[in-house]
Length: 49
Picture 1: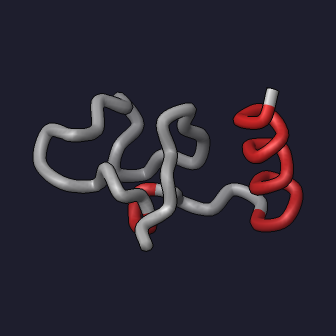
Picture 2 (picture 1 turned 90 degrees about the horizontal axis):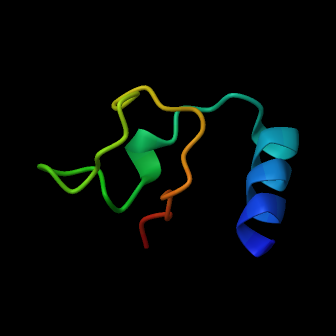
């Protein structure tokens, strides 16, 4: 439920922003999203710190 709410808020506030540039899994083979490196929707997204 919380992931769904975060995803909804992200889309509402930022629109279709490319997430890969700010994702902590954006290196090597860590990300398995087929839309990478231009994903605008991702269940595994976690912001870099």
